[in-house]
Structures are given as C-alpha cells and as structure tokens.
Length: 90
Image (cartoon, rainbow, N blue to C red; front, top):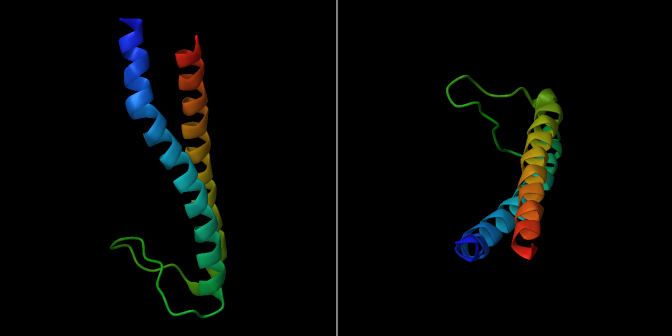
C-alpha cells in the first residue's frame, strides 16, 4: 500500500508543487516590477475588488507586501515538495 502512496505522490504532487512554487516565485518578481512601473505612471490600475484603487504613491509598498506573501506561499510549496521527495526516497 505504501508503494501506491508513493506512486500517487509522484503522479500528482511533484508536478503541482513544482509548478506552484516556481510560478509563484516568478509572479512575486513580476509584482515588484509592476509596482515600480505603476509608481512611474505606466497606465494600469491596482484595485482591491470593490474597495477602491491603491493610490499611486503606495504602489511599491503594496506590491512588496503582495510579493512577500507570494514568496512565502512559494517557499511553503517548495518545502512540501522536498518533504514528499524524502517520503518517496524512503
């Protein structure tokens, strides 16, 4: 039964966690670049659903906070991936 669990982890967890961790890390970099671009008047909006728009002078701090959140989730996905690799190797 343990080999079935290992097979399912190889089949589902590896691709999902790998794409999730790498994709979120890339998105955090894009978020910072977007905050910098919006600060210097590139024409796009940063909205919080129906709550309103982020003021232009707060674009970098909001993008930085969002980027840190994305990096934290990417790090947790990477740690979970490494834990599943250890489980399959055992």
